[in-house]
Length: 303
Image 1 (cartoon, rainbow, N blue to C red):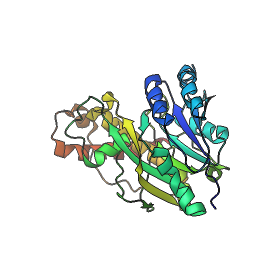
Image 2 (spheres, rainbow, N blue to C red; image 1 turned 30 degrees about the vertical axis):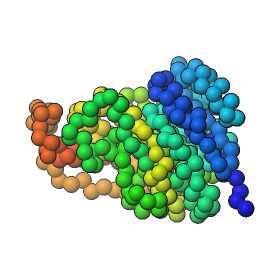
Image 3 (cartoon, one colour; image 1 turned 90 degrees about the vertical axis):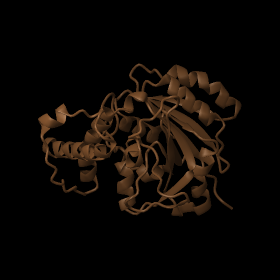
Image 4 (cartoon, rainbow, N blue to C red; image 1 turned 120 degrees about the vertical axis):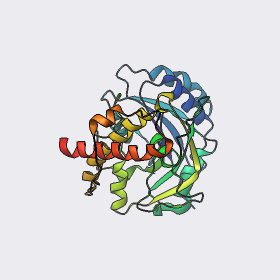
């Protein structure tokens, strides 16, 4: 007989009331056939903008016998919000979904099933994230690995399996044993904070995996990530890649790894003068690499 698998679904949010409402609506019909569930909204807005959205959604959850709770975390940064969820969660499994994502039908059951089926052999479960462009036509240069800069389409396998050491996942669609983070948390120097594009607050999961934690890939546990139209420009992507390099300096130091910066010739004046939006699609991935290296070099110099 299996022990129940009780889960707290945590949504960290910052000033996205309409998207948060859509996210919560997608969670209403989610079931946990293996135990209890509750929903936890962590509001990272100093003005508590998510509180009325949470209050308005609560009756629908209550009719299903599910508690929807609100927590306020005024310290800016998604890492602070995730750390608050570690304290506020009531159940031994925490599942994350971002405020600009919607859960596909059956998402929660599929994400939690490996804990039920494989027991203590599984510590972390990660799912697939599909981009949701709504009514915006994605640009033709948004292909292959470039899409992953939108935190989408990991595509590790179309079958459930253990993740390999070099395979990562997004914090916006995962579940993990809360006890894993009993004596640690998310680094507040990493992750989104207001308009900053810092990332990698989930490096704590990489460290846990280095220490032996097992991560399972479940491609059928799908969320849909709203792609903000302003991110569909090459300039935004370059800025995103620069911050990725900067973030990786901090993340790599946390796990005791260094990145040997390749020799990439840079003429900053020429870079600034480039017609980025008009350049050939085939040249854009190389420019992304240049910006990543520049961000990494900047981080190593500044930190």
